[in-house]
Amino acid sequence: MKKYPIDLSGKKLRIGMVQARFSNGIGSELTAACYERLQELGVKKKHITLATVPGALEVPLALQNLAASGQYDALVALGVVIRGETYHFELVSNESGAGVSRVALDFNLPIANAILTTENDEQAIVRMKIKGREAAEAAVECANLIWSMENGRFDEDEA
Image 1 (cartoon, helix red, strand yellow):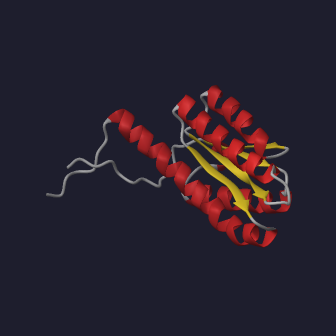
Image 2: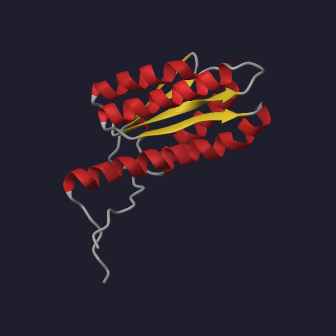
């Protein structure tokens, strides 16, 4: 069986990040964790770009513009939506998630979605650093996977 490799090397990659500033303390920590992990994976600082937007609903538009530039191997969506007492939580969560997915599919570009949707600040604080790191790993791994698929690169069959 041919198998695509799992590759977490970011040495040759260019990554764009979009952070929603709403709940900025949590969003900033989420972004910092992602940025740090990207560097640990070998992505050069000069190959990481950050754009910020007011809130989660604006993230897909910024991602779309980064994707359209053709300058990135993968993108990361960062932010937090915390449940309130109105229906607004569901609207923002659903629409931002759908927008992120649509941009990824429209541009055939990996986008790690790290827009947290939580019941309260405490849940977001617990998850922010973990999710930021996981988003970096997903972006790098998926960028490399797409490259392998486009170039027919497989791991050797052990059997």
